[in-house]
Amino acid sequence: MGANLEITETGIVSPTTNEIKEEVQSIFTNAFGTDLSLDDATPQGVLIDNLAQLKQASNSVMLNLANQFSPNTASGIFQDALGTLYGMTRKPATYSIVMCRCYGVDGTVLNGVPDSNYPTRVPAMAQSSNGDIFECVVGGIIGTPVTTGGVTTYTTPGYVDLAFRSAQTGEIPCAANTVNSIYQAITGWDSVNNIASGTVGEEQESRAAFENRRLASLSLQATGSVGAVQAGIANLTNITDYKLWENVTDSSVTTKGVTLSPHSIWICVNSAVSSNDIAKVIYENKSAGCDTNGSVACSYTDPMTGITYSYYYDNPTDVDTYVKVICQAAPSSGISLQIKQAVWDNFNGADDSKAITIGDTVYAGRFFSALAGLDVDIVQIQVSKSSDSGYANYLDFDMDELPVLGDRPTSDTSPSNIIIEVAS
Image 1: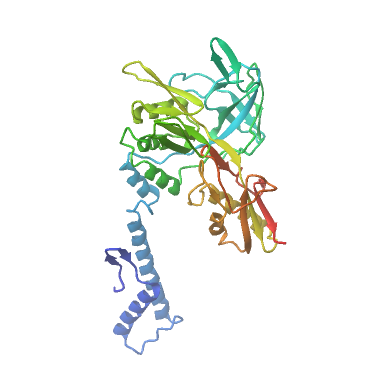
Image 2: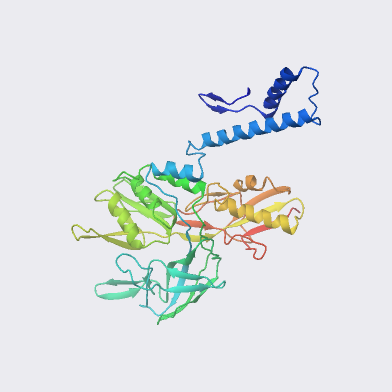
């Protein structure tokens, strides 16, 4: 049969359905004569249409298969196969992560999740208003003590900010002020609350997220460069976001609110992994003599020499972000929910777009494409760090800040971070 796929230097070209149909019609005409009616309502017309559709369906399968050889378009097991070339596997479902402020008596120790050094320890646990359990990721001490010359002072008297993760993986809600009760009592720990929304977990690493990580993993087999450290961090399980920067000069440098010491790297991770896992990546990949920056201490002990190496990194500060969608006319409740879900999915990369990450500039214009398929006239979209003021076309964030949008809207819950208004 004619009208076949054509393989060219620029790819595979498929004929249109009309071209295929015309080719089938010519075959019927040659076989049965030019007097044959080709009207779609005739039996032969129906047969011609079905044959053309079958041929086009077969072509579509071949086109889809051809697309699986490119990292930019591959999906499913084909994308997994390309990932194995880099030593990558698709990440399973991730935890929701939220920064919680723990109040209590100065000096009270709150443990983190078990790790290779402390496999049996029990982490501090909090509970959300939805009943979900959250575990402290990296432990800390209330008051954040600092000892100098034998004298201990508390830099955050009465509280400490710690990262918590959901006990279960997946899309566990963690909107602001919802992780607000202690699940398992610890003497000296009085209360807990998350001032800002956290990062909602994912069911499984999406096609877009996998491809972004592949690009960040090109230096996975290397050592001694910031790219190698980035690749190692990106491929830790339960890492949901990260940011790295380096200062190769012999003086301190401040960039977007973060100061780096001379000849150092800065790592910021939004993660549910032990600090020791991060320390291991730093040890295996950074150059000797390269300093680290941050407020979270971590260490790794070389199993061959027994020497312990200490490093630092940061957790991002969650910053609630608000998106205002101004419509020409008031949408129905169903369309309003679709608008909010489309904005949320685009913000978090759930629609295969690039998710907004640590230190990103958030442009309001990115949401127009997400709303293009909805039956609504959009007048304007703006973003702000406050629900009632300061709306603009874009927002800048410090390099250690993570824009968050709260929980995904549903018919039962409608977070206030996405606002719909009618043009006046």
